[in-house]
Image 1: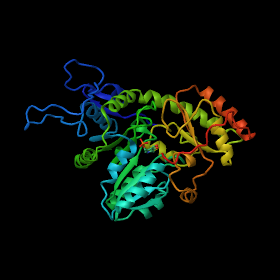
Image 2: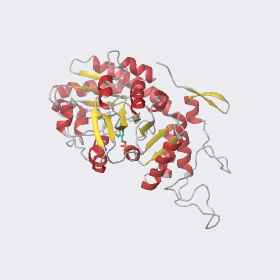
Image 3: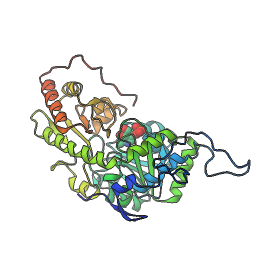
Length: 410
Ligand code: PLP
């Protein structure tokens, strides 16, 4: 796979890894701090009642967030980025581009919270929402028409890890006059930069890989074009969903280690995926790094690595539940992309907000187990899985029994 792109910087062409740590962290700082200060202030004093400085009120703009936004734009190859209080706040701002009567086409394997936002918030504003398997190019051609204003897609999708040909989808969108928004959370700009593939908007739940430490919720939108950036910035201020200074600082800190974290985590993820693939009690291992993964060739053209998330099946829900509950080196948690490994049952947790009949129609297996691989040693994770799979298959529950998984509120 090709690796991180080069970009011209002040000292010539710089690799992505260099740009993660060498950027203008403290513009105008009189003390020449090397880490971005946290401007923990709500307001900024004005020279006079009629003269405004660069900043006046943190909801509208804050120097710490501004450094983060410039860095996010640069890393994704965009002209402008906006940082939000969460990935869903970022997605909400993007859906504000739609007027009542406009059509939104979304990929049908998507994060449960995005589904709920489309079904319960955007639809109630009069936006017409349709779903299609956008990993199938013919289905995508059929679904996107002249009334479509926005197309929302993940690649790889979550949790089925389906691969969408983003370049091809971008050209369908362009032909129909629709904007393409790619939720690239599972990849981060280190592995995939959708603006370079023709997308109009990139969305990240920065809660995941970008921050990487499981201690911040944040989201980002990155766009190429100034006018679109201005509209989204207007919404960010009008709706008050911008990221706070402390979280902006934490995210800037987490971002610096993105490449080393992802390199190591995805190497371990491949080892775990190969172990699971060879295990007689495990079925349908989905991971873009595996040779037989559907769409792998497309993924390799548009991304430089498989990521850190994989999923598999056990054959029935009780076995999957016992397995997840029996793991000791994975936290049972809804998120992914952290330095700590997590395990989840998407249908009961992150995707519980998708009604069960919709999940069934989309062939989202109820027994699906999703793993996010962290920085633990591969051997430790594999040993933990081997034991937990054996115990789960034998029908043994861990003692004491973990609480019933229920994540409908996420
Ligand atoms: N997009 C994807 C792919 C996600 O998995 C999530 C959350 O899990 C979101 C968006 C929403 O992000 P957040 O939880 O930061 O609001």
